Image (cartoon, rainbow, N blue to C red; front, side, top):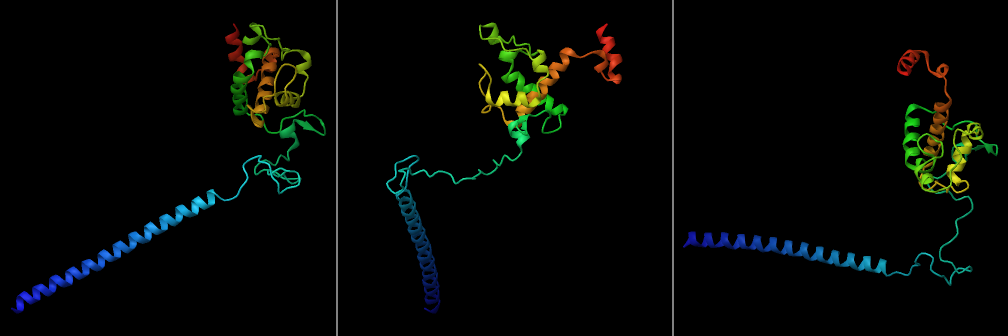
Length: 214
């Protein structure tokens, strides 16, 4: 009888261990459900808390507005525009006669790309002012090769792109600041291309140019 009793005792011990494990698992599940429920309650309480919707009327503030005006001098993160030349196209209140950064080949290619997208409908690819919308009846803009525009400072083009001029609207929303300068630089390149002489070609390229011209 001793052997069956030993077996029976082993079975009881194993069952007891399993029961303990089951109790642990159940406890963990209950705790998990409790935390999840409390999380939902917290989220719901945060969602339902008193708050103002944008531009909602307020009885708390004297001016009746829930959206508070910005404190004087407030600057949005990353929007500190302390470079007058870069952001206004002016120096000492006058249209800048220089660019705010070096004009490289990459800048000119970027300017060409942006010009082709935004400017050619009116100004055409050569800058003569005979773009497709002009051919369809839109008022023709002045050619970039007009002497007045050839003599205009780079800051002038930046200002016009930013604020618009005549029938041309502002492109400030579509064209970022540095791209406006890139377009201005490309316009300069267009002007030079239509009034350049052989003497303007670098000597290292002149022979190839003269051969192609023949």
